[in-house]
Image (tube, rainbow over all chains, first blue to last red; front, side):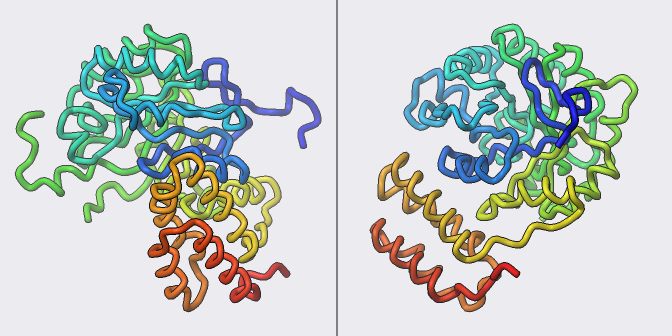
Amino acid sequence: MYQNHKDTLLIKIGNVELEDFPLLLAPMEDVSDPPFRAVCKENGADMMYTEFISSEGLIRDAAKSVQKLDIYDYERPIGIQIFGDKIDSMRQAAAIAEQAQPEIIDINYGCPVKKVACKGAGAGILLDLPKMQEMSAEIVKQVSLPVTVKTRLGWDANTIKIVEVAKRLQDVGYKHCLSMDEHVSKCIKEWPTGIPSLK
Amino acid sequence: MYKGVADWDPIAEVKNHPDIHIPIFGNGDIDSPEKALAYKEKYGVDGIMIGRAAIGYPWIFNEIKHYLKTGEKLPVPTIADRVEVSKKHLAFSVEWKGERKGLFEMRRHYTNYFKGVPDFKPFRTKLVEIERYDEVLEVLNQIEDKFSGIFRKE
């Protein structure tokens, strides 16, 4: 297709090089497992992510979480996505995920599901950006792999701070890239009582 | 359902911000090659992430790539293509999770694999009720025979 290497635009994430305008398979709970990833890879996905994996589950060595670390050579490059609300757990989980030898560690700062976001994990961390930055920094320090983040525009329509999120992540290290969901968190509307513990 | 922000403007704001240099990928609602091209051009992101649109339709990746390169659309997958890929997905699912769980967790994918097939409901019902791998394969074979004229390549 390209006449020489110079004509090929590359997207670089750390040492992972992707062809210009890569198409990524999103991490989807109960969907992005190895069987589904196999058919997506065969049909052109440039990079894929595992389902999100609980940091606490990985630390406890829970079978359900550990099984999600299964990756196969033909899937590369692949990212393992982790989520959690505790910085130290996330740091340890990143170390465990790194041992499974993916190309990338991805942090979930976007899940809006109540059981995740209400505890301050996933999109819940968007309510505490200094903590988000610290967690990201700890993970980047912990692993030698590139770290990426998947997030959403904001916690709700009134708190879209995505530029600040991006700047804070960029400050943490060169290895980042960001994938952003166009949606804001759905939580507020789904929980009429709000989320007092996070306010 | 919360409607929220309906477009990618804030994503483009990040991508085009003079102080932001990390790669930015957009995600959300890309479900066709045309939309992928339009969003690529309009928002300037470095790439896109596909989620829901790939469920039961993994062809979306190559369809988008082909369209971005040539401006032409690939023919839609035939029934034989759909049966072949769902069998492959199912076989791996059963191998990796065991028969019971593998069959069960595959159920959520069939509707999308056979989206657009008229009068598909009786087959779908069978696919989500049967509890034996060989019987599911038999239903998939029946689907291939019965609907072979649909999505035929030109």
